[in-house]
Amino acid sequence: MVDKKKVREGVKLMLEGMGEDPKREGLKDTPERVARMYEELLFGMEEEAADHLSRTFTVEEEDMVLEKNIAFASICEHHLMPFFGKAHIAYIPDGKVVGLSKLARTVEVFGRRLQMQERMTGQIADAIMDELDCAGVMVMLEAEHTCMTMRGVKKPGSSTVTLAVRGTFEGDDELQRRFFEMVKI
Image (cartoon, rainbow, N blue to C red; front, side, top):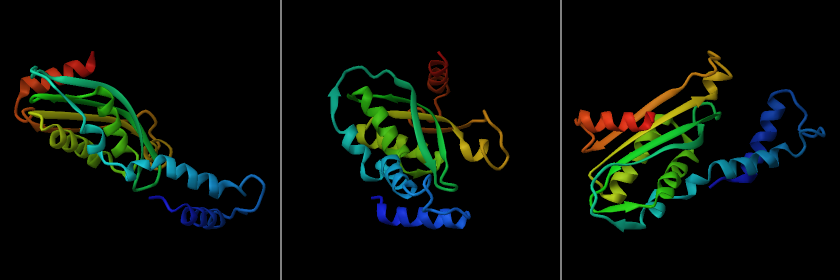
């Protein structure tokens, strides 16, 4: 849970540390605005993926289900700067499926935290694997990190791609190839 009072105090100290006057007109409400922003951006700390993945539907089909291009934004825990991109999620049902919006909500749960993309990718895959008890899952995240594009090496347009492979996707080159082909379409 975001402690808005502590965030306000921290932002005021940060502004002072930058040589700014937190009482000047343009900055006087900034600590409150930043506290509200972090409360909104980090709401995933209050949620569990299981809350979204628990409602399932029985199916006989056992072919791949793919939801791609799920937009997400997160905050890098190293620099407190945003990273944003797209998630692609495929799973092989084992008797049950989940509503497609629930996959997007699962991405939100893990994205709306202080995060590392590498960890987030695995968390999404593990939650789907555990909650759906599916045969396999594959998750790919593609993201632009503003700590790479705005500061440091300043390389706009660069992207980071991470992959998590679980269950039947592991070691099945044909299944993985189908995933990558479907993501490209």
